[in-house]
Length: 91
Image 1 (spheres, rainbow, N blue to C red):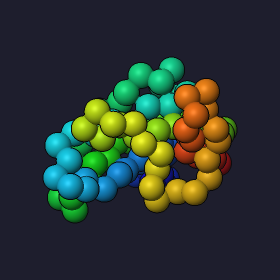
Image 2: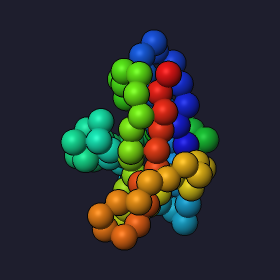
Image 3: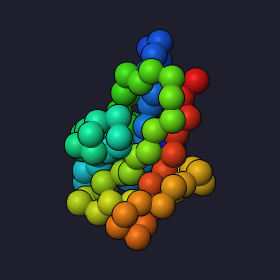
Image 4: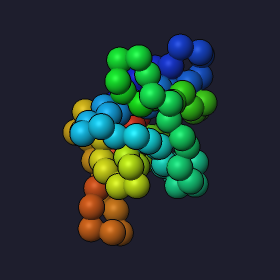
């Protein structure tokens, strides 16, 4: 899931820690597809805030080494690997 971050100009990306997940990251065109580590929250989700200007961004989560689309968001774009990237629109 993504939502407006606490600080102006940021977006918070978060994903549920299912099946006892131990680590998570988000990667997208905003990071040149380099994973950004996420921190486990008290509510059991992993989250990270990313400074992003207005625009449209593709991203995926990496949970315990496995790439996945955002399970809480249904706007996707096909990628060259035969799967789908999630798409975030930042306003």
